[in-house]
Image 1 (cartoon, one colour):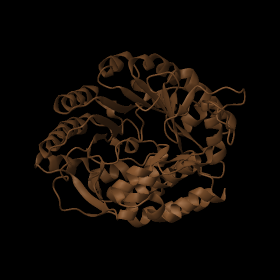
Image 2 (tube, one colour):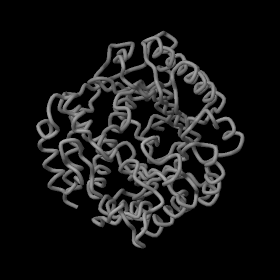
Image 3 (cartoon, rainbow, N blue to C red):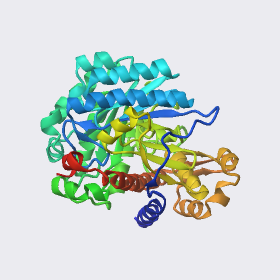
Image 4 (spheres, rainbow, N blue to C red):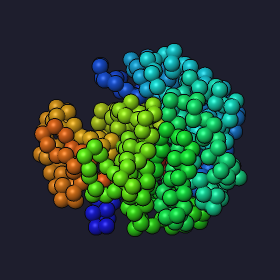
Length: 450
């Protein structure tokens, strides 16, 4: 697909130009803008084993390393309170946030006591979907995102997840048991593994439906430079040629959407019926008729609803104003900074107005709708005047379903182009993480690089 290749190239080059870290001298994040809504991101960088496709900051779990870390993350949270921040939403990512459940619960409880938190979203792994964990998470966490990746036993073995988390059938049964505990249960999937056939993908989609999960996210496999070798060694070399076909299969089976087919009342599938799911973003799907559907649904890409957000924890990435800050990837240095009364930013990238407009364009369209009036209020120009090349490319590619004075929305092809754009953007963010990871020394470097 020519437009996919062109878009991949352009986004890759753009992210290289503006996602470059420079040393930071600040020991505190900027103060909040009065009246602005913020979400708080927390990063827990510990895993039982390290997956070959993951570029996030993560270390092999050791309790004596993790307990002081959680305590310091709670201290950092209170630093944000002292700066004047309040939050109505918290997202806890990793790593594996549930790896020390008592520490996680204490951290969530402090966040709820300190801020105006209405919803908490946390990631976890399938081996933690057991009653002793679920009972403690119920009420504390509204949205639980479970890293499934695939239900196929062969792919799970390639990813070194079969021995850790069980067979696809065991994972399916655990999600079925866990779903009633949460407002939203998300099955986190990956598509376009080299060894994944269309039949394997279709079976994965069928199992997502069977699982009872109220939400599912299907990420395209992302081959950033830091994981290309480990991916090639374990699951094979990534091929983007069939990515669009796989994405169309996912959309068709989950939503009933057939590319280019419109009828009164919505999209229809092969049997003339709407699917069980609807789009929450370009790659997030919410089950119709559940608490996860509609505008209130929480999704992994929190940046759709919260353009600016501070992040705490080692490896956290903050976006505030014109600046993107990256916290140190060293747990040792992180602990020393917090215990010394400082926050832990080690580098930042500053966005020009044009790049801020590009970021808004990408994130709102990934969330399925760009508000043109808001864009003009915030940037002082229309999206057509601010981003003429981007608008012309997307229009010529048939990406827009609605393009009027108020909004932009997407056709099925437009949604796929946003998947491509976000895939390349996240590869760029992973390159940013690699810049921070390269500063690791001593034991920590040995733990990650061997």
